[in-house]
Length: 292
Ligand SMILES: NC(=O)c1ccc[n+]([C@@H]2O[C@H](COP(=O)([O-])OP(=O)(O)OC[C@H]3O[C@@H](n4cnc5c(N)ncnc54)[C@H](OP(=O)(O)O)[C@@H]3O)[C@@H](O)[C@H]2O)c1
Image 1 (cartoon, protein in one colour):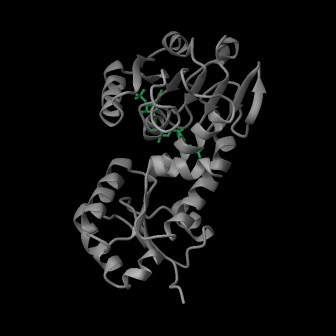
Image 2 (cartoon, helix red, strand yellow):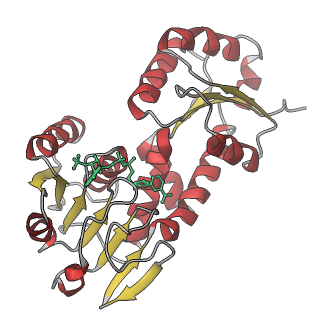
Image 3 (tube, rainbow, N blue to C red):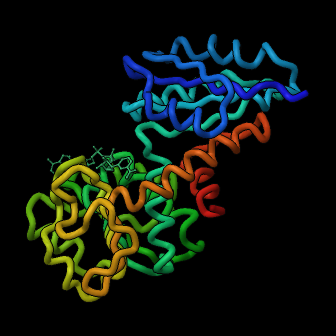
């Protein structure tokens, strides 16, 4: 008889994310262990508790989930967990701090439904946050063919910040064509999107980044706004818009992307329990989303 499915939540926040907990239960987890305020020094002990209790054949029924709002802190916990595994003594894990991996995967898949991303210009407005960086990573990586000439403009109010993010991305994907852009005012933002085929707005909640002049851009085919809190990040796109055509461009709002994001999140959790050796980070989560 197979063992019950146990998911162990590692969350660096003072309170464990209720969002992550609800999705876990809705994904068929039998028992959810919710750990809050987890620090790096506590990870090894928690992981050992997970891997030394069940026989190796049953380890696939235990899995770890790393979430919470502090992306850097959550990723540091993931690194510690990986270092605590050895040989077959490990369990599968998923990392989705602040929904960044599932959201970026869903946004890129939505764009791909309407445009082949090879050899295009893509602008990520406010692309320096966790979601924007992961969108850039996926476009330079698995969402385009090797040798593709896709240019990815990463925008920030500060050029040095955009440059720093481009450097981080180049370390992971040396062939990626990342271009930093300063967008400290609307003229600079309009210039950064002027020749784009695809625009993603990945800014903080409740901030308008683009006025409605984007609607007359000649090359633009797809516009995706991930900010769900009014005002919209891209003026004229509603949060619920899902493949809505506006002035000949296909548009998505945050909730329009959110349906696929939720499906990806749930499918990824289900996938964790297929074997004990999976590490689901941005690229693996994107691959799961592409099969939905
Ligand atoms: N649809 C969904 O299911 C879903 C799920 C998760 C997240 N989201 C949304 O996705 C978006 C991106 O998330 P995130 O966590 O990556 O965002 P974030 O880190 O909070 O912000 C992203 C970037 O926004 C810029 N920004 C912050 N305050 C600003 C201001 N006052 N004016 C202009 N720009 C400002 C910053 O860029 P610079 O400092 O470099 O300019 C920052 O790096 C958010 O709106 C979030 O709510 C949606």
